[in-house]
Image (cartoon, rainbow, N blue to C red; front, side):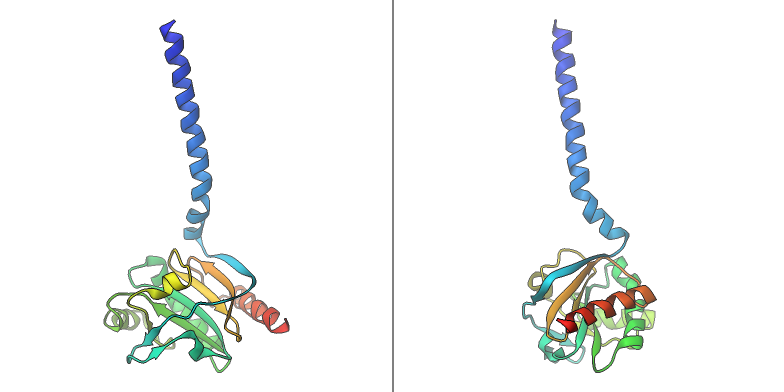
Length: 190
């Protein structure tokens, strides 16, 4: 009789463990997928962004309002983040291809060491076209509700968020550029 009781208990524990593993796997599937490549989250309706301060390499204070009237691809990153490091050259190439009076790639580092930490990295990998933007206290993370790096926001000329990508991406690939251009065109047609 005792054997049957132990057997039923063991089966119940095993089923509970399997159910827990399935639920846990479902909850983790999205974050794990984000490490495999960027996932796009288009804004349901263009969303207003919170205002937060950051600075340039020479210490000037800015907010995103400094880019009013221009579309911005805002990439929040850090030198200690391997996927961020990997995608940085493609952001530099995108700035070369698309940067100008109507579009700017803003690579915003949250490194605590500021320019002393970012400049050697830029020099090491040959970043030539991106300006250095710094947020050592990391206030952008909370203001923009960012939970992982890299996170990239496409901001329309009106200062509203159009889309968000979580994870690394090759920003200068033709299909990525077409995606950005389509999102911007759609926002300007509204």
